[in-house]
Image (cartoon, rainbow, N blue to C red; front, side):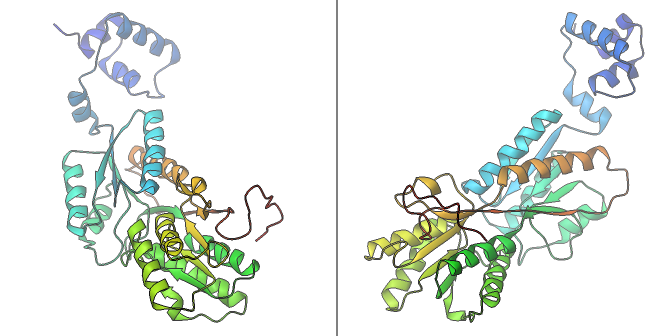
Length: 348
């Protein structure tokens, strides 16, 4: 017959509560007692009943991570950061993919809550989405952290400083002598695209360049979106921009492919900058200048924040909003860095 917590308590001469405290790393258990109980647990090869333990503690040790599209390298890195912190704190992670679908987002939230995950980290769809379930989580004090703002939802938020990152990227292009700079937008439901547009506009304004709405091109978030935008641009206009700031690296890579297929040179004819610093950006034939988001750090910080909320969910708290600084990775597609060149003289 399997040994129980009660059996361990009798062998150690302590209470069941003390054994539970040892199993849950309670700071109230003294070092000497902890060592004695752990020795008996190891000697008897005791394995706690996780279901019973979860019911007793009202916690499962599970965290849910909900992302828009797990095929996007951005979310891969965030997941790695979340996983690392979960391992450090004895939690496990469940990843859920919304496929950029509003109904699936709400469905996945409710499925994970029914499976009694202790909290959620959510990269939400930001426009035209039903906020009732988010407001309900706030009201019931259910622990969750957002990786992007939702209008009127009072919650913990951690994300990259998109606007400053795009401002720095556009300013860099201007300093390199580019004057007709276009912006390829992201998905219509992404507020990050609006923030990056605002940073682009501010850089133009600060450098006495006129904002031209015709240079804001509809894009998306995939390679094919950038490629289609590039094809439309080169086939319909003989007057190309001399630089393009893209919503992300995938769009930038697709856009560059369209330019090259149509005999245009990057960066000689058109300089290009992306966002995300994806794993392929530095390995392209002409390496991609990009705004690096510390995505793994964001994942780690979101997990730390969530676990802190889980452990202190009975305490009153004020939601936090944390912006993480981005970094401009200067490579070849912007025209500043030829192969093997030193770019240490470039400053923002």
